[in-house]
Picture 1 (spheres, helix red, strand yellow):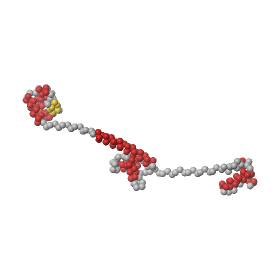
Picture 2 (tube, one colour):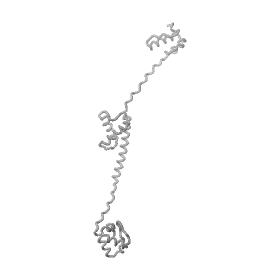
Picture 3 (cartoon, rainbow, N blue to C red):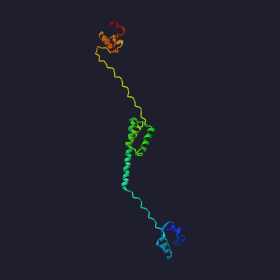
Picture 4 (tube, rainbow, N blue to C red):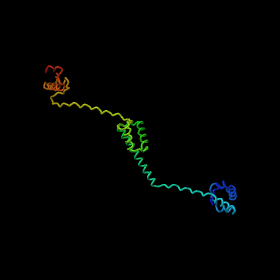
Length: 214
């Protein structure tokens, strides 16, 4: 017989004391009296205890533990995988926008994060929501709140190298010095003067003692 001894003590303390004294134990909580313990009671006591138990409200059965559905677990796992992939793609997209000139600043990060949190996706990061944030916060049709790196001017082109003269064996280079010209033939000196005049647009007379030869 299962007896709730806390309830017995509260509703019929006299019966509780008789049972505890006869059995020789002070019970608490819900316990089951074994046949040998019931045999220690007189028939009148057993009948009184049975009548008391019959008057007690039925103890509600404990609810069964909630069953876990594997389909729900698998669906949750798929959602986690999808979410992780979307976050990775969103991060990559932000890096691509930085490469395109978006400044990596705390202000830009806060603007984009607030846009994602306040949008219909409620903080769910994806490549699409990053593009939407840039479109809404960037220049053009957006609010132009994001800051961008200034565009760098293209490097200046180096002037093309001056063409190198192809000389015959008897010709003198344009930058020949006086020592070289003294040792040259009259033909080479005349050719040098003509070529220098063509380059500079005016007649150049060789300096030094060769000046009197022309």
